[in-house]
Length: 373
Ligand SMILES: Nc1nc2c(c(=O)[nH]1)N[C@H]1C(S)=C(S)[C@@H](COP(=O)(O)O)O[C@H]1N2
Ligand SMILES: [Mo]
Image 1 (cartoon, rainbow, N blue to C red):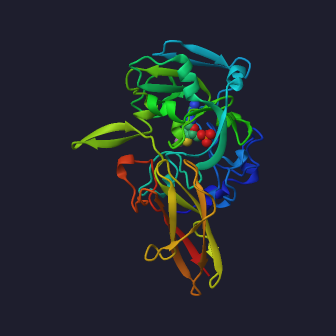
Image 2: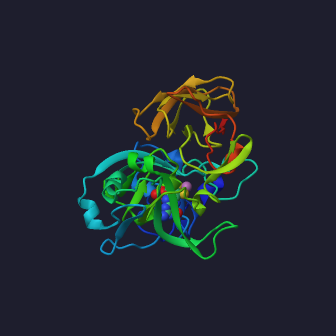
Image 3: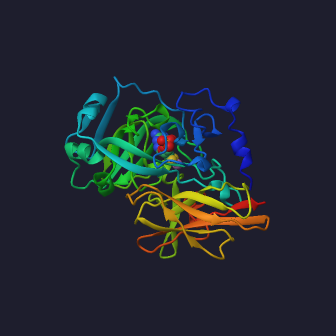
């Protein structure tokens, strides 16, 4: 598996003629239209990912919504359906949270045999500060009925379902959450790192679902529907689902929580490293559940592991960068590095991929092969 290919595609001349939020961020183009852009993870150097370097994962052409005509409706199994304007939303009490978004397909390029879908390396992940109104504020105003159990978030983007069997005609991008999660910490965000959301990240308004894979954080959010039953939409059954098992019978469930993961930003795959020196191995670790409390690094393919030091403090649902000073061997050769995170509940990253997820939730320890010279 080589990574040089994808990186080479990201030359200046290849940069998309897109909005100015691209190009300068050096994002790797995985697909031009709809736009799917990856953060070059080897350039990780800040706690908050700059807006122009934040990965973009879009299933349909980005809709062009206008601030003035924008409406967000809250409807379905509620006592007081509402429809609010952008200005009304901006006037409600706001909250700012740091949260890591990771695409559920991040790391797919590491799977053998190859799986279909965007061939993300390590950089379909980013950490940003999101500002907006708690979804709970809107739901409490709308007042869900006594039997309400789920909340569907719907985006304004539409297109044909990419996989068959799928619904005919055009579908929107929609995902549901349990009412409990919706009332807990979900944000209806309009700003990212202190600036208005750029179009590719959901202008004017998107959901941020801390601790869930990126697919839950619906962009271009225009409709919130409260349901008395379980939602079975395309984007949580055919796509972004996995096969769980109940009493020996496989059942389809929506993907949700981000699983414990760490990733090595430096060195890159096949980086040439001088022997007999100190090399700073550097990366990040995150999870949607208990806090990340340890990261270990192996430089000999998993025989021995050493503790890395954290660069960032613990913050729920946000990554922690870490670093490890490696004394590289004098003798030239190829070596395999891996990192492994442990959480406060004592769980560590697995060393193999869980096949129930087919092409998602790639959170096992990933080998980074380097050349010492
Ligand atoms: N409306 C809408 N929301 C969406 C998507 C989409 O295609 N349409 N993609 C989802 C997926 S799969 C991910 S990983 C995140 C990516 O958010 P970003 O592009 O701001 O990084 O948005 C989610 N929200
Ligand atoms: Mo995603």
